[in-house]
Length: 405
Image (cartoon, rainbow, N blue to C red; front, side):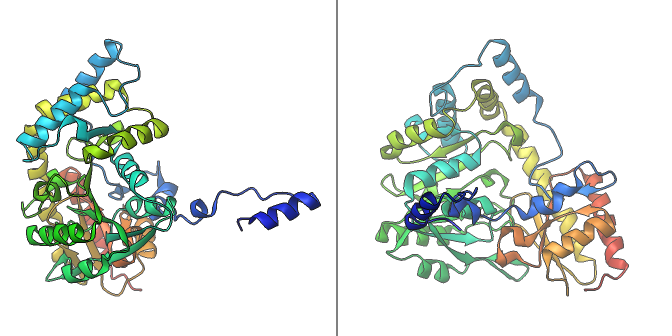
């Protein structure tokens, strides 16, 4: 247990040993349940892996070549805390031309991955004991960051209705009160593929304006909206709204290992964001930013093709699962994942482990994303058709053998 000042004084007086332990908030964090299933099987042959959130293709050559040229040119030094100005200007142009947004370069910060964009935003906004409301299930990093900072998280769960995950808007608005500091929304959502409807986004903005509540929108999958139904909170917002957007080059441009993202925030937060970036990582690598610049300027055909392929693979996996007795798959509206469950098998960790052992198939347990998706498994569909077909066949054979609880 963490020691209070009286206990520490007693230890000093008696000369007893101080415990070797991290602070309470760090020890209270949950480890990744995906890693818990996957890590023991790295390097194992004949295992179809669909548990992590990245594709099986490398970064496109035109991005890699731009970064390689930057390395050759000696771009290995520090940059501005908030990123190279040329990249922020290009990002501003991209957001205007492609997303219909109008942030200035002064409102943009280049971060070391989308996860750092989330961390920096919450470090800027949250004090210990602040209340955060999160739409869940969601990638666990989103809800663990507030806990690292000592804030309290209140979850509002999506539910499956008519074959898709849906939000109860009334429940969300009721959860956001004058005690709420920050609302977290991820759309398209990881793991469910849910997208935030326009009318819900408008109602959420009105409610948060009235109460003075901040919104942090995790927009990492925004370019992978298959149906085009998802609303951008930033596109609906007024300049004075308390809203930030965290994003990443990882998914739409296949740059997961590059660790580059960005944060859009009101200009009033710029001094604090610059300081926080300095005290976290100082800056993102210059040569990697050169690759990101190429992604923005040359990458639209690639992004469009990727989105179309993922939509087709969503249909491929969902339709195959729908033919299996006792299997339910919720149809995602965007993202890179299909969630499925097997009737009578409600422990997703146990089920994920069984599939590795009995079918040589790696899927992520739903409990990794919160209790709302317990009993479900997440299948990453960002893989070649032949790879997906192999995984489907392994799962189908396992189902046909008649798994029992």
